[in-house]
Length: 157
Image (cartoon, rainbow, N blue to C red):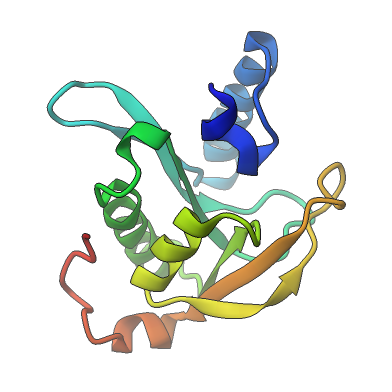
């Protein structure tokens, strides 16, 4: 993964570390019954990112997060996938709120959060080994999600 594609999620890593991350996600599904979904570009079949519910030990809340490769940013993939993932987290997992842990310099993710109807809740802190990585916590309650003006329609764009 390029530096640009990974700069807000720890930077580029070697293939063995990427494999361990992949296995962590598979383990989350196996143990928790949820994890991030792969985003596959329909026209090409290319993997372009991951989006979905995430809550490892010590995490600041029930997160729906996203990460897509730079070439597809701005095409609505993250927003569309996050909309489906948030619906799923509230309807299937029974979550009562969702958060998004966003680096204060990550403008593209802030744009997605705003399109989803989320707002800044305040500064946050991730568990070790990420405790020195600055984040803002964005989010909303299930009631806010269901009451948003565009509820029931894809939030694409």
